[in-house]
Image 1 (cartoon, rainbow, N blue to C red):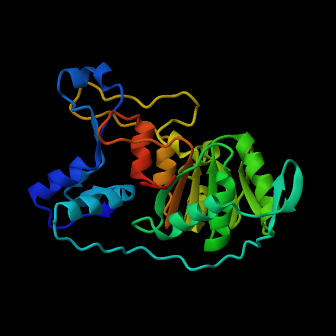
Image 2 (spheres, rainbow, N blue to C red):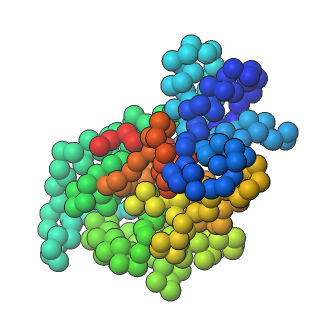
Image 3 (cartoon, rainbow, N blue to C red):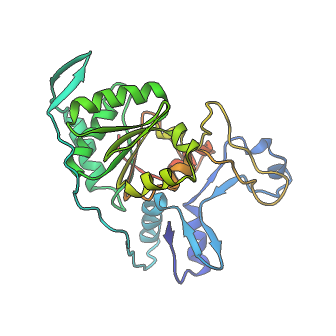
Length: 294
């Protein structure tokens, strides 16, 4: 989270204005029609013990808003910057059409990695938008080799798990751990399905894996607000003046991961502060943050 100190009422309104999003379909909620709910998800929260806080993915938007309105502030990042501790063993090879061939990065893939590791404020939180078949998994591999830290690559299906594991076992000589499809065998470079992580949420092995990871890639990050069961929708608020607590879903896995680097990959990320958005787009902004490369 991004925490605040000494916020006056005007600055609270400013921060809330850039961290709240209209929920698509709000009109169908009786709470919205009776004006018990404003139809928005507010990522800025307040408690007596913690004060004002907002999810870290919103930090860039908050800083830009404060700078735009010339509000003086000091930004302090107390996180530990990970040092390179893992040599994943870059092979210089890639699996293409079932054959192992020499790897040569495309120029936009190099540019995407440069953007995610150097230009995203605060360092380590961003989304990279790349179309289908442009090599999102390969872009992640270049970043994994560059940063050389314990890594978790999260996918949305067993099919993607198998494809990614086979690819990374070609591109890296280190052991590629597998968490998914009935297997729990993590390593310093682990590919996991969101469904298996969700199933183990709250267990000691889940906590141990999360505490190991310094770099987390979230493939198909536009699904972030969806429940692990495909097609399940996040509930709208009830008739009370507060939205109903959502069941545990993909965003909870991401928010519970303390990795310094959280990078989302998607062909279709979307969240417009001026238009109603799906909850998945809203939570995409909350966790990995803004798009830094397209």
